[in-house]
Amino acid sequence: MILSWPDLRDRLLASKAFHRFAVRFPLTRWIARRQAKALFDVVAGFVYSQVLYACVQLNIFSILSNGPMSVSDLAKRFRLSEDRTDRLMRAAESLQLVQSSPGGSWRLGMLGAVLVNNTAITALVTHHATLYADLRDPVGLLRGETDANLARYWPYADEHAASPTLLTEEKVAEYSSLMSASQPLIADEILSIYPFHRHRHLMDIGGGQGTFLLAVAAAFPQLNLTLFDLPAVASLAKKNFSAAGIADRAAAVGGSFFETPLPQGADVITILRVLYDHDYHRALAILRAAYAALPSGGSLLVAEPMSETPGAESMGSAYFGFYLLAMGKGRSRSASVLADMIRQAGFREPRLQPTRLPLQVGLIVAKK
Image 1 (spheres, one colour):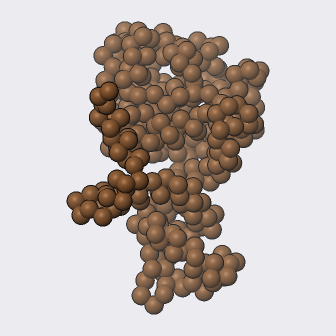
Image 2 (spheres, one colour):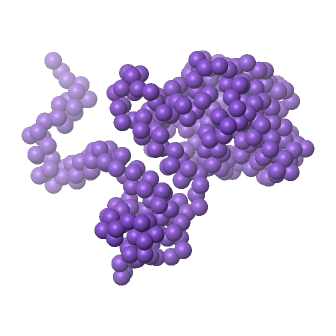
Image 3 (cartoon, helix red, strand yellow):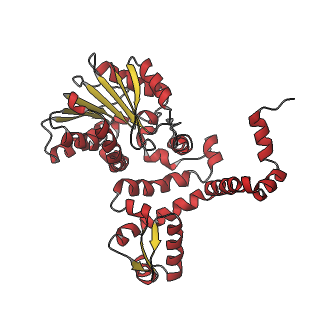
């Protein structure tokens, strides 16, 4: 039997004799070491995440933003022993979160500096404690044998519960605040590459508390704005629009994608980080509702993290694959799958628009 190259490669890599040869032979030694490190990083990834979580809980990045501090001073701030503080700081240094200075003091590292006053990322780091709890038994999660905490965090995710339009502000406040905290990352990307000045009226479907539309309102004062989300979430957005002084041109409408026709009048619709929360048929229903709400020639923008993104494959398939599994519904999709769905909903010419940070968000633009 003639083995294919993938089969031959797999047999070779599984061979202990080849392992010993690869480590000794000068031309393959660097590959073996790199592969060993990559595999160990997969094994140790949870530990790395918990070092970051500890740093966020202890507010290390904000503290060090005021300048270097000694271990003894940090230990007092953290209410830890100096030995445990030193252990944490050295772990954080290995992840480029902090950096040691001459004399034994500690300062911000390259990645830690990025996190100073970055409420979007720190909110996500804190939120992930819920996900990690659900992943303690990944096989049980895959078999549907666990009671996932994440599903309760997103109350609209339960398709068997009463209509999500009945959720109260108290029920939606926590998750919508998290979405609002992380929304500026997405808003900056979209506003930097899409020409909203060509439009007169933008509707954001599933717009949460209105963070994206607040950014749009500041950048494009000529645009009229409509937000559509669950009634309790839209109520929060309405308050934010009033507080920002844009209530005269920004409306917040409550309803359900699946129960309520979308408002008419917009010539551009955005769907940001919404479709991957839903299975294929419900995501397609949202796209069809958007199509029905737009006039001929209207534009659609779909933005969310996408699977199979070059350089970020693990983000789409591993991270979002299991996050959405714990959440109880949804799927990360590739740009080609999303484009096919957009075409199936009736839109034409869907195209992937390059973004500066494709790991965080991909953008597809289409026309009616």
